[in-house]
Structures are given as structure tokens and as C-alpha cells.
Length: 130
Image (cartoon, rainbow, N blue to C red; front, side, top):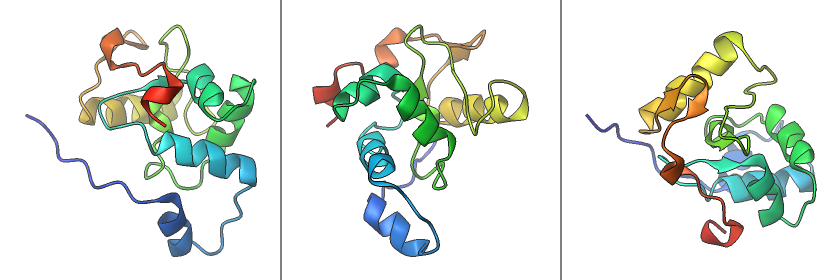
């Protein structure tokens, strides 16, 4: 049974709701690009980095690691290039990763043995989501 996913807000509207947050210009670029990934799809750290003109997927991972707006800014939709899950909330196992799996599954993305099981769900061309 499909689950209704709430409408996507803009990064600016999310930040307006949380005036206490400090978000760097780099984090803004990452989070704005991430908001373009539709529910039911995922992208990779490398593709997300390329979409914002960054050569470092690790830098993108660090920006996502400290995402104060999750899950509204859906960092759970970013996986490694080999389609394994990577991390979530600064962790690569345990309850945090289980939460990433739950969020993906609610959106219709199947995860088997710690990996996205449907490669068609992966958006890898930066131009296709920016």
C-alpha cells in the first residue's frame, strides 16, 4: 500500500522555521540539491557532489552527517556508488542505519542485505535532478 509523502518545502522555508540553525554556504548547496531527489528515488554521494560542482563525495557525506533538517532534507536518499547504504546520522550501523532503511522503505525503495535492491531507483545523472 503506497504511503503519502509530505510536500517538499524549500530550504529557505525550513531554515525560517529554525532561526537558531547555522548552515554553511556549502551545506546550503548540498541540501538544496538533495531536495530535488524525489521520494522513491536515491542518488549517490558522488552524483550529488558532481551536481553541485564538488569533487569530493566525502565532503558531501560530511555535510549530510550533520544535517539538522533531516528527514525534511532527505539525506536518507543518498547511498554509496556500489548501492550500499553508507551512513545515517553519523553512524554506519545500528539503530541509525535501521532508521535510514525504514525511511527508504516507506518511500517504496527496497533494501536487501544493506543494499538498494532496485538499481532503477538510483538517479545518477546530476542534470536529471537539478
